[in-house]
Length: 209
Image (cartoon, rainbow, N blue to C red; front, side, top):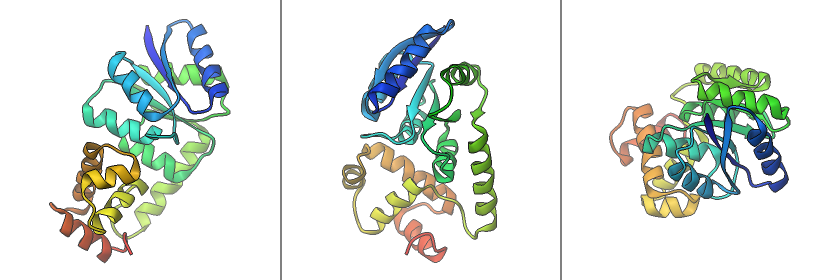
């Protein structure tokens, strides 16, 4: 039995997906969440195998949830649900470890099938997401310098302004640990080992103004 938590800040949509999950043989609905922080609490406490999460939510976005899960090494896979095939969202989500990306107007049966697929270790991308992701990879491959996500860029920009991890977390509604995780990812991508070098390198590569 695959244990599933559904997270979305739109109650009608959230309840619709939750109902489809609960009625699907082989899937067990263990909870619903109206925002990212509530979703993370449910994931930590319910031994959830998979989570269907909206890519943009109050508190923590679906992408932030994926990053938190990876940082805490929680054995939960995440299917991101979005109203749009935004190339940046898709790239950011997949790069931090999302197992799937579907549009919110997907048929409920397709969402259930995607949950089953990612629980079995397979990746699931909507056709629109595949196209957007391929385009993003091509653009990044052609661009000079490493690709950093929009969230990583925000964290780095605030770092350049002299803010500490707790201050950045308060500004972006992230935990200090998540901020540090984003910074560590930036260090690895830029090939540096501290904040000053990261900022200097990012400015030199045109990643920061």
